[in-house]
Length: 114
Image (cartoon, rainbow, N blue to C red):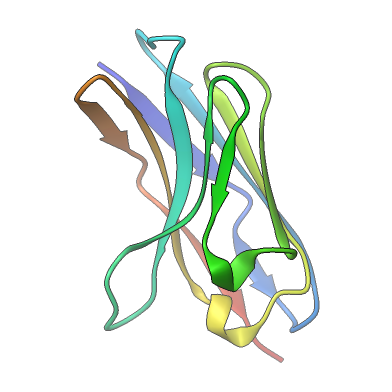
């Protein structure tokens, strides 16, 4: 069974920064994609950023130039969020997937407010 645990969320002022971490446990296929999604109240869950095991990345247009996704190994991924805006407020979820398998974390709340 694969489990994902996110950490690093919190309350930050506009213009501030946060770093999210996600650690996967269990039997993990090394060739995978790990990503961050977010869901704001009343909105659908959306992709924020993803990174493949080979290092290729994909970002939502709304976060390009402000957020950076990176990974330590096949089981750990980070999201550095700079220049945060109130519209970045959401629950952020970590996801891992490979060959038809997908697993989600429980989510961590990020609130950007003065």
